[in-house]
Length: 66
Image 1 (cartoon, one colour):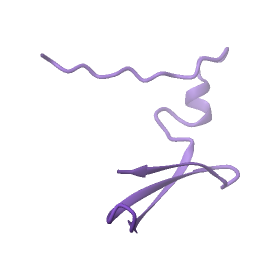
Image 2 (cartoon, one colour; image 1 turned 135 degrees about the vertical axis):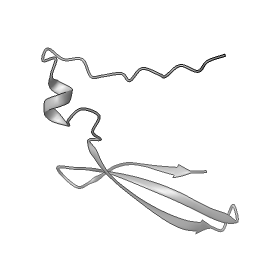
Image 3 (cartoon, one colour; image 1 turned 90 degrees about the horizontal axis):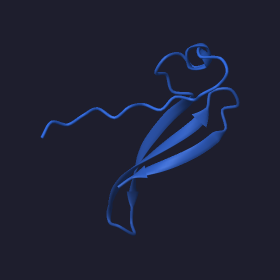
């Protein structure tokens, strides 16, 4: 069985070039930082990704890699 690529969903607006002009084609709207830390509860190292807004530099979301 051949694996197919998943299609990337784009933000639909009245302007068809919104994605290209705002962020650039395929660009991430966030600044991503990561750090590795030891989690004593699980007894192992974990990596945490911090997503910051490019304009305000505030943390928008975070994700822990398990």
